[in-house]
Length: 203
Image (tube, rainbow, N blue to C red; front, side):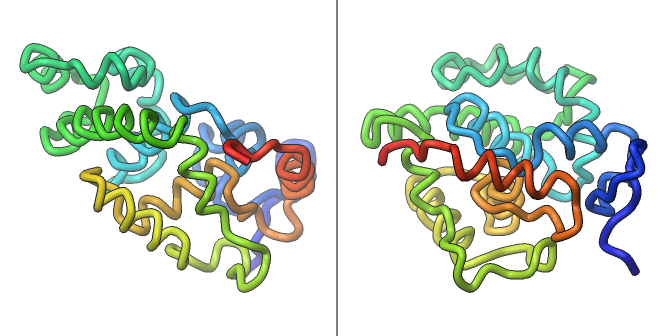
């Protein structure tokens, strides 16, 4: 089976982006492009946690609802959430109402504050786990890596929740720590250019 499909412009793209209408724009403009903004990194880690056991389509379709419910993933604000906020979120039909996952976001916001105090930024810490080019798996053939295992372990040691190696690998793919667009995908070269000009935080 081919690893690509033709997009609306006739150019080849990663096969997965044809699985749902929401995926094309996400694939073309977000997935794999490097991110250094702490709030966006925190949002993506949170949403990947919510995805656990569900499809990314479910989460992507509700992303704006999540942003509204969680104050645009402002981790300083989320870290101060009270029982009233938890009750509000558990009643919010626009998001995934899973108590453990909601509580994990609040917990992880508090852990992010500690990490920022210690490291200067979440981005500086995360980008330390960017893999080298040697030994990278062929695009879209892996669900974990040595680096995702190490980052997951480190986050868990700091008290983070819902950050297993598979969740962390999906996060790394999406946030541009690796370029996992397949070789023939028209977006792969764009992501490569973005990664070349990207200033690694904390370096």
